[in-house]
Length: 170
Image (cartoon, rainbow, N blue to C red; front, side):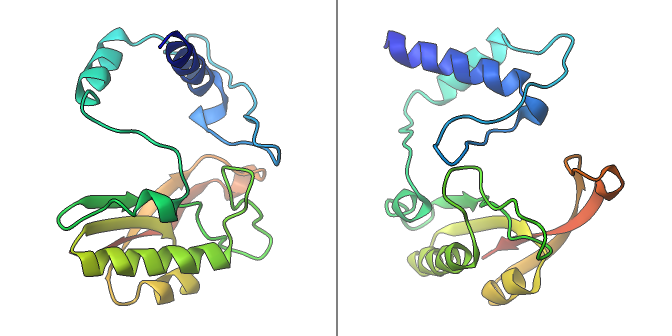
């Protein structure tokens, strides 16, 4: 239990002190986010941690890829999917928060899993970039365009509001 608590503490520290609270790893699977510039990072939020602990008492957490993660889903379960977004342009290269890229092949597989979960009777919601491929993959579902503020871009002038989509089967 001590090891788990130490890992949780390190994760919270890194999350609260790294750039924009991002979690990404490099090609070796090692945490790879620069430090943020915070005068007083909110590292210890005891009340919120105790509430989260209470809510998670009867919850099983696991680490797996999405195809494994959704295998246990059953009728009336709510499943929210937030994959690495499909690139908006050919020059957009960020496709992963982990060592393996999430490209068109993975987006297509995710869409198949979404369809299978729909057939099982799960309630589904997915967010992704607003591209023709993503709209085509989920054309049989309810698609809502939302405005999302982006604060991360190597070109400051390109930071701002962009369209994203939310896909639902309800």
